[in-house]
Length: 103
Image 1 (tube, rainbow, N blue to C red):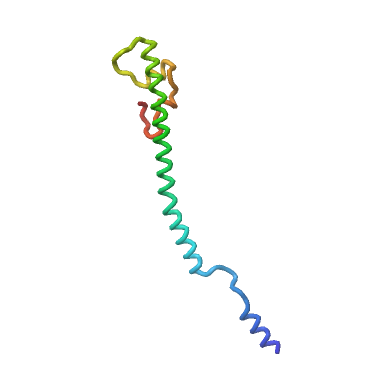
Image 2: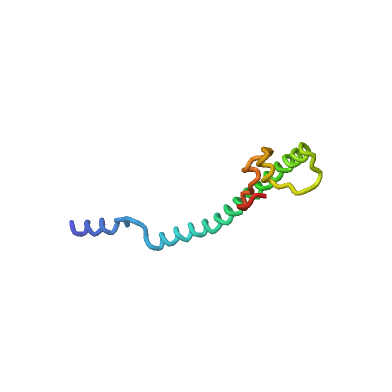
């Protein structure tokens, strides 16, 4: 009777881990989710950089107008480097986050 009871107990044992199929399914689902999420994240980051650049440009216009008004300039070339040197704006405003160049 003891031998039959041991076999029944051995049949009822549950496996202690994941099967290869289960692991492959999990990896595939994670891959699909990442394939969906990464492009969305990159697009959102690009929109944020463009928005920041647009905001900086909107802040440069009043600074340029104020500089021209203070110095009596009606025409000519004006760049953000001059505005920063004269104290009408900061380097953070003059730099676009989308590029490394000033202006």
